[in-house]
Image 1 (cartoon, rainbow, N blue to C red):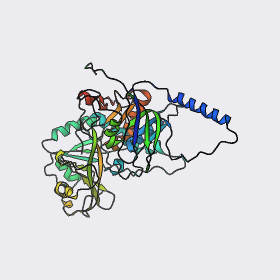
Image 2: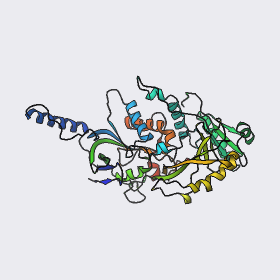
Image 3: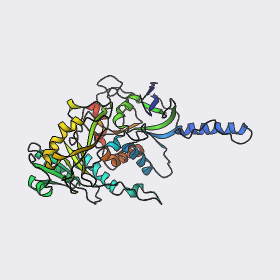
Image 4: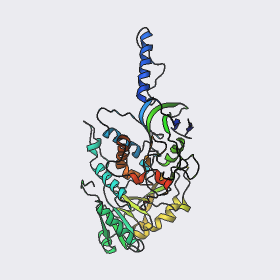
Length: 452
């Protein structure tokens, strides 16, 4: 039997133990044995049941059907849909493990928070359409009896993608596909842009794609390599401010650890085999630091302003009602900052962001930066697209990660897809097969080009 014992380096962590090639006893059998032993002990002890020696209420359960590593929006979405779609009477036990209980460094809360339908792949358009419907009707899913309605402060102001002469034909073809999938997207000429958004300088813009969200409910190894299947039998959860690990037996592990999901995959032995083999194929997801800047501009665009993605990748949107705006720009490969911390590079704004803001929106020439922060993309270095579904060798590890900046947008639909795969063995509503892990070994990129 192959065994692996590893642990995360900091914070609340995970120890994956018992990665083997044999079939162990079921959790149900183990529960029955433990229950029987407890009954026998109780029957021979005099008096009432004794008080536990110490409080264990802070510890996770000793058994769980599914352990989800990562309590961000994707992990919680998977947990929601597992419980939502479970068959009546199943009672699936789900444990979510999150190392940052304050969420102060979590990608979910540090994201820009936009949602768009303008993607280059039909599957991503479908994910967005469902996610928009989920958010718009959030109280049909998450409302609690006798509690106030859930208020996400969801403000669908739209997305505006600008294209130069060189990329105009590509944008036009993508809009055609997006509309076929049911997205509400239209093309706009520079003249139309100027009329609708008079605050914008359209120099260098040949065409634009304007996506708007309405109240519509429309839903639209063959090489002969010999492999050994493995299975995770338990995980060890590291407790906060403690050297203590709590073992949790489980049937399934969901890797939704975002920027750190590559490390979690390594804990399970994924990618540890010979290079070029399925066993040696790593999960190509790593943390990439991205800056978000907030600025004030009294004469800036009004409430009609959409989320704007400039021709060179600089993006910005309005934030609230006080003439505040936020935005940024992804660095080039050569400019990638150190991802071991969340320090902000303010020179990046001055050199790489502000000149393009001032050119596109002349009013931004007199802006004043008020705040800034950094967060992490769970960046898929292979094709900048999500990884969804089971691992082909570690058969009870499932992925929901690698969306490279659009995980928050697609979380409701991705969570549903993972739950369908776990409960039914296949995708039901949206065919997510192109997102499977096996594409990394096969070298079949499922490239998403609309990444900011």
